[in-house]
Length: 117
Image (cartoon, rainbow, N blue to C red; front, side, top):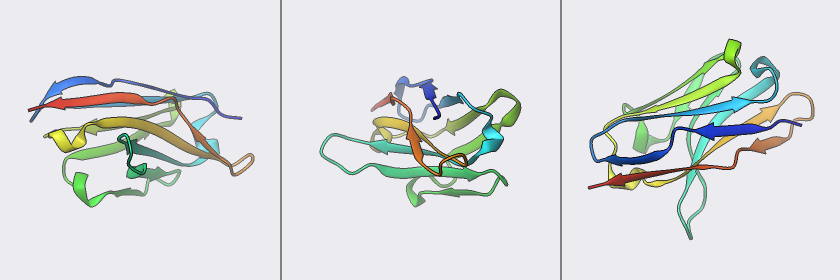
């Protein structure tokens, strides 16, 4: 199994920045793909950004050019740097990882990001 723990959420003004972190309980190199998703009440969880073990990345169109996903294998941590935030970015952000040991998806508990206008 894999435990994922997010941190870094909070309240920020529109136009501001935040960095989310996700620490994995296993070596990051054993997790094929790490991703950030977000969800608002009554809505489906949506992919924000993903990064593979080979450092390939992809982003939702709504965050391209504003968000950057990165990984530090030495720290078993994935980051989501968010800038130029707007009210539509308000959501609970979840870290996701697919472990090579069982090919299952694992989720963190979520961290709230609130952007005030």
